[in-house]
Image 1 (cartoon, rainbow, N blue to C red):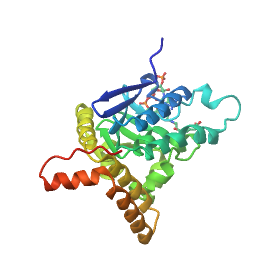
Image 2 (image 1 turned 180 degrees about the vertical axis):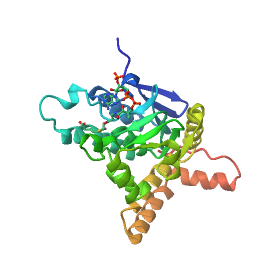
Image 3 (image 1 turned 120 degrees about the vertical axis):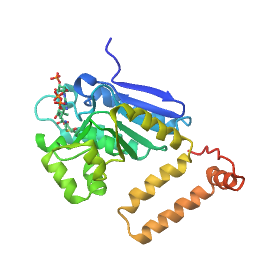
Image 4 (image 1 turned 135 degrees about the vertical axis):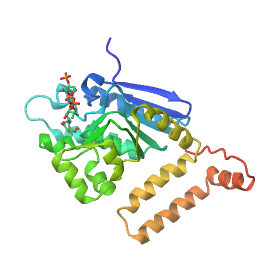
Amino acid sequence: MSEASILVADHGPVRVITLNRPAALNAFTAEMHGLLLPALQAAAADTSVRALVLTGAGRGFCAGQDLSDPAMVGQGIPDVGAVIEQRYRPLAEALYAMPVPTIAAVNGVAAGAGANIALGCDFVFAARSSSFIQAFSKIGLVPDAGGSWLLPRLVGRARAIGLAMTGDKLPAEEAERIGLIWKCVDDAALMDSVLTLATRLAAMPSRALAATRRVIDAGSRSTLAEAVTLEADTQRELGRAHDFAEGVAAFLAKRAPQFKDR
Ligand code: T3D
């Protein structure tokens, strides 16, 4: 029996989802999509999960769409738009809506949609030997899986266009230098670094962390007045929640807080 193309494991409150088709650098097949989205939804619904890590098995993180998967490309002229709508849109939206912080542990090459799914996580740690490739232009496509929205926000228009049009390989160190990712770490330190941060985030107020992602993403496309309105609305909601009362009480009592909202 072949192994599942997604592996799910818990490290205390940290859920680790591993893309598991190492022979094809974990390229997305219809089968993998059929497992990954429910795995993300299950993590979102499980209140014991307080941080999510996405990584890849073997020497790659994810090479994007599996270009040989008959279930995706079908016969004749493929409807690539339908693949984006039916597969990549729900994936990208599930990550952006995740009620807990998300971390990509990029263990090797991340190409095409694989790169943009990684970059859609709140934190991206990349092994020094890994790289990011906007591979789309090489096969006559544009950045997808949220990449066209994300890239200019992360690195500005000039670099977004440069990376997307050339499809050149961007080494992890350079990705960190230009602000595409959070951190580049030695290969051997990748999972320890990721799990250390994930465990720390898991002890923090999850609802506020997810709301932080929302206000920052919304702020990049709104006026100052709109941003301040959203901040006020969000603070109003968070201010009524358990975690705010607990955070303030813990501060005043000089003790560690016990956050529980999601
Ligand atoms: O329907 C749609 O297409 C819409 C969706 C689009 C979203 C997208 O993601 S489009 C972009 C798709 N991805 C790519 O174009 C990347 C293709 N892969 C590569 O360019 C290279 O494999 C890498 C630069 C990522 C890595 O190069 P390298 O030299 O380290 O490894 P390799 O030898 O090329 O690959 C290793 C194996 O993985 C190889 O199989 P083999 O020969 O050992 O049996 C290769 O065919 C396989 N593989 C790698 N990427 C894919 C793949 N198989 C299927 N699809 C892939 N995307």
